[in-house]
Length: 478
Image (cartoon, rainbow, N blue to C red; front, side):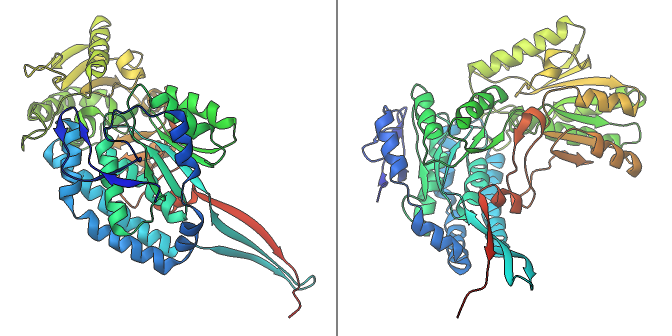
C-alpha cells in the first residue's frame, strides 16, 4: 500500500480517529517537499481500478459498501467539527453529511446506467461498424476549498472514481480532517489503496504541492474550486501539459424579486440563500434586485427574517450565523460595508462586528445600494446583503448580467412567461425560480463566464472524466 493509517493531531486537538495520510506524516502541518509529493504521484493505483470500475456489478457493490460506511457519522462528525471550529452550525453539518450520502447514492445509480460504448452506425457496403468507446481518464488532481469540505470533495471525487479514475486531492489547509475522514471511509468500504488519495499540507507548502500536481504529466485532469483569480493562474499552469481542467470559481448571484412575486416567500428564501453558511458559499445570493413597486415591502419583510437569525458558535444547536473563516474574511466584509455606506447605502440591520468577538460579524442588510458598489461587483463571501432597486425587467436582467461572474441566479415571480424569459436571459450556469436553495445531488453544478469551466454532479459530472475513443471496426475473419 502507498498510504497507511495513522493518528494525527492539529493545534493540540487530539484526533481519536484514524486518518489516511502519507507515510511518515505524523502531523498535518509537517513540511511536504516536492520529492515526496512526486513519489506519491508515481505510485497512484490506476490499472486495476480501471478494470474494477468497468465492471458495473463491482462498482455497485463497492458503492453500497461505501454508503453503509458513510452512515458512520462518528467518523465524519468529529473530523468536521474539529476543523471547522464552529464555522458551520450543527444543523448545517448534518446536512453536509447527508449530502455526502446522497451524492454517493446518486453516483452509484448514474454509474450503473452509464454507457461503456455507443454504436453510431453500421455500413453494409464496407462491412464496418462505427462506435465510440467511453474510457476513463487516468489520474485526476483536485484542489478544494474549505467551506463545504465533505460535500464538495464528494461531488468532485465520486464522479471521477465512478468513471474509473484515480484521484489525488489536496484539501484546504483550513479543513484537512474532513477529507481524511472521507479517505478513511473509502478504505473501509474496500476502495483499493492508491485510488482515493488525500495529500494534506500546511499553508506555507500549499503552492509547492499544488504546483507538483498541476505540472505532472501523470495527472491528465485537474479540478479546482476557489477564487476566479487563483483559477486563472491554475489554468495557465495546466496549459503547459494540456490538462483537461474543470474549474468551479467565484460567483456574484443576483436574487431578482419582481412585483408579481410572493413577497413573503421571496424574503424568506432570500434570507436562506444569502446567509447559508454565514454567506460563505459560491452560490449564495450576493445582491438582491427588487422592483420598485414592492421594494419597501420586501426590505421590511427581509429584515424581519434576518432579525430571527441566531449568531452563535456552531456547536450551539440554535446557531444560524457562525464566525467567518479568518481575519481576512472579516476585513473584506468591513471594506464592502464601509464602501457601500460611503456611496449612499443605508444600514438597516447589522453592519458591524458581533459582540461575540473574534471573526463573528452581524448579518447585515444594506438598503438603497447600487449595482456599481464593491459589495455588488465583488463576491463578498460573508453575511452582507445589498438590496438594489430596479424599474423594468430589462433593467434587472442588465444588472444581473453586468458582472464577470456567471455561476447562479435567482428569480421570484408568479408570471410564468416572465420566468421563462428571464431564466433564458440570465448569463449563469444555474437558476432558481421561486427557490433560494438549488443544490441537490441529482443536478449538475457549474457556471459560465469567469465562474468556471465544466460541470459537476449527475451524469455530466462523470462525463468530465471520460475520454471518448472512436473505433472503426472492419471485417474480421472468424
